Image (cartoon, rainbow, N blue to C red):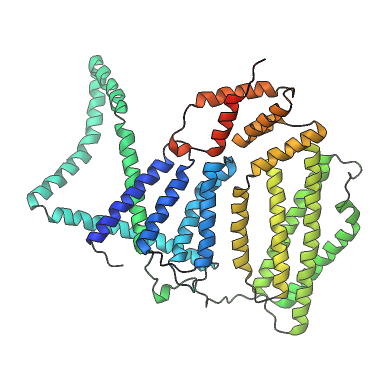
Length: 490
C-alpha cells in the first residue's frame, strides 16, 4: 500500500490517538469492569466512522459482534475469575477476526486454516504501515527545518544517549565519596514520584503505541491481498485423502469393542446406585475421565475420516455411514453415562465451578455429535463452519448465564434438602458467591461459622474502598450494598 500524508490521514491519526488514550484508561487503571464496554464502544465507533457501514459477511459478522459485546459486558455484570482471564485474551482475537472478516470479500472462507494466515498478514501489514508512516512523518518534520537545526537535534539525541549512562556512573561515584550528596540524591526519587513523572511517561508511551497499532490496522483493512496471496477463498481444495477400506477396518474394530463394552456394562452405566466396593468419589472418577477421553478420541476420528476419506462406490459409502453412525451412538451412550456419574458425585459432595463446567462441556459434545450424525446423512453440510459457530455460541453463553450463580443456587438447594453446604468454597468464588452467603444468612443465621465468615468478608469489602469508574461492576455494587445493610451484631 502506497503511503501518503494527506490531511485526512493526520485527522484520523489524531482520532486513533484518542482511541489509544481510551485503551490506556480502560485497561491500566485498576481492575477492569465497565471500562471494557466503554473501549469496545469507542473502537467500533471509530471503525464504523472509518468504513461508513460498508461491510461484507454480515451474518457471521453480526454473530461475532454480539459475542464480543456480551463477553465485554461480562466484565461489568459478573466477576468470574476464570472467564475474566480467558476473555482478556480472547476478546482482542475475536475483534481482530471480526474486523478482518467484515472487510474481506464475501467469498472468503473463514473456516479454513488459510484465514489464520490472512489474519497474520494483516497484522504484519498494520505494523509495517504504522512504522513507515512514522518514518515519513519524521522526514517531513526534518525536511521543513534547515540543515543546521536538524543537525542540532540529532546531536542532542546522540548526546543524551551517551551522556545519560555516563551520568549514572559518575553520580554513583560521587554518592560514594560524599554522604551529604548521597542523601540529597536519594531524596530526589521521592520528589519525582510525587510528580508521577515516570508513571505518566509510561502511560503516554502506552497510549501512543495503542494509537499507532489501531491506526495501522484501520488503514490496511480495506487492502485486498494480491492474486498469488489470496488465501481462505471458497475454491480452495485439499489434496490429502485416506483409503476407505482402511477407515472401515479401523471403525469396525473400534465399534466392536464399544458395542461389547456397552452391552456388558449397560446396567453399570445407568445404575443410580453405587457399584459394590466403591465410594462415590471412586465410582465417579473411575469411569468419568476415561469415558470423556474415549469420547474425544472418537470425535477426532470422526472428524478426520469425514474430512479425508472420500468414497464414490455405493457399497463402501453405505458401510462408512453405518460405521460412522454406530460410533456416534456408542459415543452418546458414553457421554450419557459420564453425565450421570458426575451428577451422582455432585449429589454426594456438592456443586463446584469445575463440575458445572464439565457438565456444560458434555452437553456441548452431545450437540456436536448430534450435528455430526446429521452430517453423516447429509454430506453437503459444512461441518467446520458449524463447529466454529456453535463453539462461539457455547462459550459466549457460558459467560452470559453466570455459571457461578448456577453453582451457588444449586448448593443452596442442596443445603435445603440435605443440610450440607461448603460455605468456604462459596466464599472463594467471586461476589456471586458472597451474594449467596448473604442469602444463606438471611434464611438461616445459625449455620456454623457463617456469621464469622461474613464479618470477615464485610471487613475486606470495607478496606477495599472506592473503585474507579473503570472497575465499576454491577454485581460488586449489589453485594457491597447488601453487606452494608446486613446486621451481623450479636
